[in-house]
Image 1 (spheres, one colour):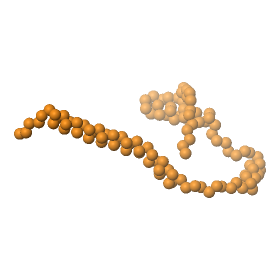
Image 2 (cartoon, rainbow, N blue to C red; image 1 turned 90 degrees about the vertical axis):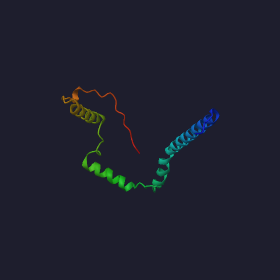
Image 3 (cartoon, one colour; image 1 turned 180 degrees about the vertical axis):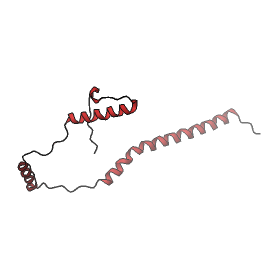
Image 4 (spheres, rainbow, N blue to C red; image 1 turned 135 degrees about the vertical axis):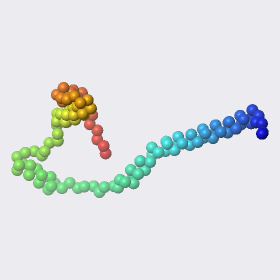
Amino acid sequence: MEEITIPVALMHTGVAMGTVFLVLILISFVIYLLRFVPKLFENKDKAPAPPKKKDSADESAVRAVGAARGSAPAKKKTDGELVAVIAAAIAASMTEETGVPVSPDGLVIRSIKKRTFS
């Protein structure tokens, strides 16, 4: 059995620890580079769309149909309706979770942040 001296053991330890740290640095660099991968695929998927020309005849036709009906185009849901739907969903979730009926009238929604995903 060969005896290992302290300087040799320290050298082995230094080489092993150096190898581990180099691999950790390499892994962290690869993880850093992964944030750029979605941008590479995003550019390939998006082809330049041909510009659409607005046809004034189409716009005037839409206005004429709206005037003939006597009403404006359909409105989007108002914020009040959105709050009511969210309150009802939260109340249903709380009722299902606790088993105790929860009325949406008792809930107070303090803020709603609208987010658009493109």
